[in-house]
Length: 222
Image (cartoon, rainbow, N blue to C red; front, side, top):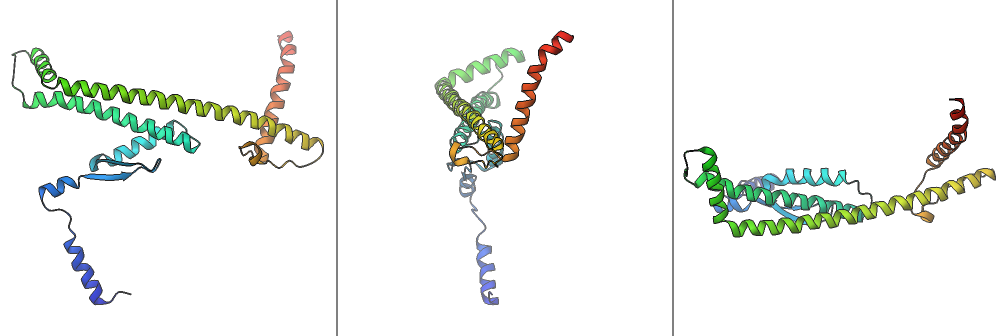
């Protein structure tokens, strides 16, 4: 346990650790490093946006339904690029907003004044706006490429799972016909199916088969 002397010393040190006091120091600590939990990448963004960023990435990544590490990596990349796209749009909006905040009234008509100030902002910052457009195009290509790769991975995974399920159902039926108990072996097909899941899948398949057999008779009766 800490002695009274150590406790007093800790309290004294804590009082000294009050953070930056100068304007420049406070400005610097407004930028925090965030370790992205999905792909381990460090993202540096303003502190005020950290929670918004984390919520954005978490929500969008979950909506893409990744199931493997590679799928999760791609989903996080897509989410991050959408965040970058929003940031570019915000910067462009800010350029025009600055013109209205700092500009002068150029016409008596509000509509004409808005149009003239927008034109003035564009002429003054055309180079910056052009660069933003290039960045936006690159990010959109990144999103399109990552989305295509993710969809291909998910499609292949679903197809492989369907094949593995068919094989597992066959083995389940074969064991049942020999009055044996089938134990699923995930290491053989890369997917894990419980006995209850296989039994339910087989019941549904049998019910569908019976319904198809009855369809001609029902059609005649109608």
